[in-house]
Image 1 (cartoon, rainbow, N blue to C red):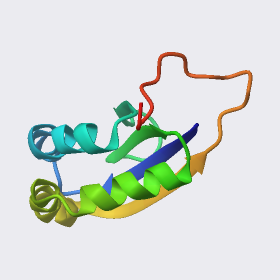
Image 2 (cartoon, helix red, strand yellow):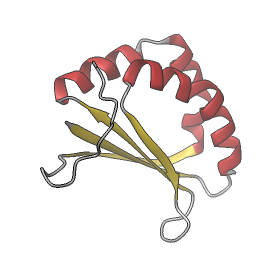
Image 3 (cartoon, rainbow, N blue to C red):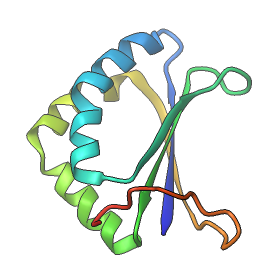
Length: 112
């Protein structure tokens, strides 16, 4: 299993509630259906402000590639991106490899 950590920082004039309203109604349903492996979506209270962090589990990098490619081809996802991308100032992602002693039990991996 791999975990993808995605971190976005919104522009300071953007209200996180406005972003979340669009994302939860238009983006998340499409992502959950296509990507699977949704682990969570978080906002920061201390540290970088206006930051959103979300985690997705995949069986491996190839599974991630296939699912992200399918997501990119989805018109509903592209429509959501047109609305939320202008709100985002920076984007970063990392691929994390869980250690054998820190599994996330019950994670619904993509492809299962």
